[in-house]
Every structure is written in C-alpha cells, then in structure tokens.
Image 1 (cartoon, rainbow, N blue to C red):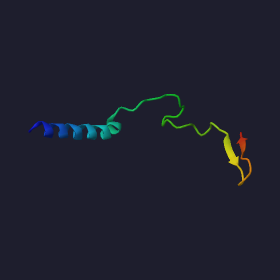
Image 2 (cartoon, helix red, strand yellow):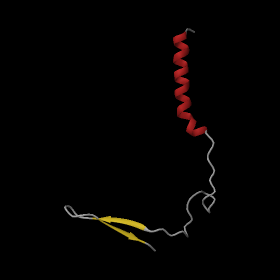
Image 3 (cartoon, rainbow, N blue to C red):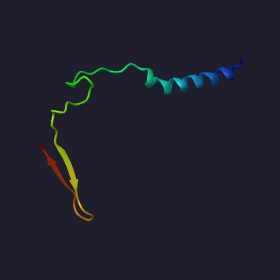
Image 4 (cartoon, rainbow, N blue to C red):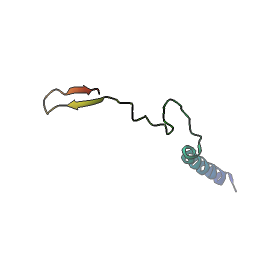
Length: 66
C-alpha cells in the first residue's frame, strides 16, 4: 500500500467518523424539565403569538395569554 492509498483511506475513515459521531456520542442530560422525557409538562400553560395582516397593510401582533 503506497501513500496515496493510505491518504485516501484516512479521508474515507474521517468522513465516516464525522457522519457517525452524532449517532454514537453520549447524550447530554438536563434536569431543567419536571417530566422524565425532557419535554415540557402539559400543565405549564404558555401564551401564543399571532401575527395578522393583509396585503398592503401593516402587520399586527396579538399576544394571547391564558
């Protein structure tokens, strides 16, 4: 095996490692959420933002809080 084959094999190995790294890397654990799955609890009510406007008019922003 000459140096060109070794260089090509190293490039292929680095590319495969770059693509596989997100799959095999350890997950970061955060305990900021109250639920075990990491999603927000359903009891936490959040507001919503609605942006409305017609063509040629200035858009208006409506904030709805529960």
